[in-house]
Image 1 (cartoon, rainbow, N blue to C red):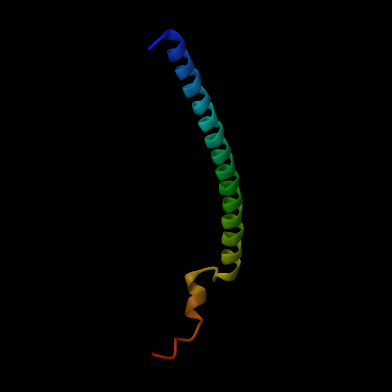
Image 2 (image 1 turned 60 degrees about the vertical axis):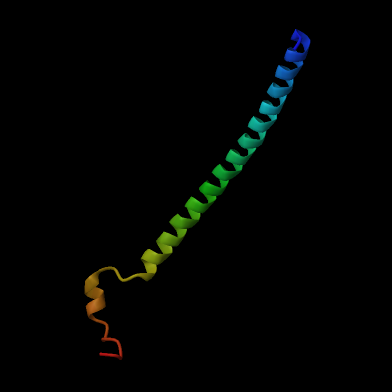
Length: 69
């Protein structure tokens, strides 16, 4: 294999690697945005659940037992 062929081969490999890195970078950036969005949604839902849930186990004692008892 001549030096010119080797150089062309290396240049081709570098071009493919750069393209792959650009693609992976775009995917990671999109996933980061998705993770941030999902994290904020989980925080919001957690806050809603805390508002709906009883404040303490003592609050459950005031409820009548289920009908099957």
